[in-house]
Length: 81
Image (cartoon, rainbow, N blue to C red; front, side, top):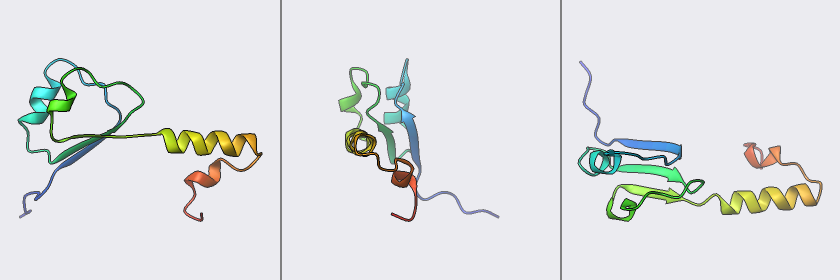
């Protein structure tokens, strides 16, 4: 027999929420829904306490700097930083 989940999270690259998505998230068991800010969130997103949006700006800035300075971009995604 399996124990029920104690906490439930959702992660998405791009927050393309449409239709009743915000209503469903707000009334769900999801503790947190995390997305990045590559797409502007629809109106009403600020009223969803579970919704968190992370900025990709630092990663993009570092990528541009590395390209400009002829450094490895793949090292950004390596565990051997």
